[in-house]
Length: 165
Image 1 (cartoon, helix red, strand yellow):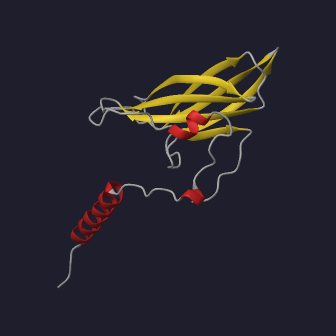
Image 2 (cartoon, rainbow, N blue to C red; image 1 turned 30 degrees about the vertical axis):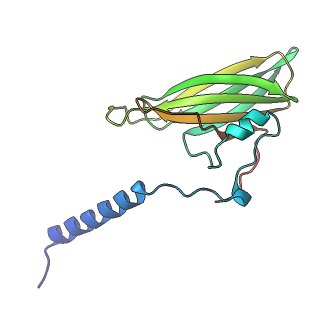
């Protein structure tokens, strides 16, 4: 029995879709303590609230520029679609380290969004000179309730290499 090319292609499409659906529905495993990202050196309250999971979200980078008597922190984010919102939750200095907490609100499940990269910036001017900056991000979905924020370390200045998963 010979299968027509259309039936074979359709079969592969069904198998591929089933594999993608299976992989997408699995929850990511918790990262063992030995492989967790480094907790912030400053700000014990962030360490206690930080999620043990690695950051997995939009691309985040941070730059630090000296100002007269202080510093300017520039956080750049690249969202993969439209419909995201960036809000600043907290910024403070602890032992010369700038700690920034941001929340990204992702589009609702049924929201139609533009399929394009969207670049956003968030700036903070510290009255104290900084030598390091840590950016912690909490990601929520529009319309979904969240009991407590789960901040994850998304970027550092100066950049530090991350261990491979």
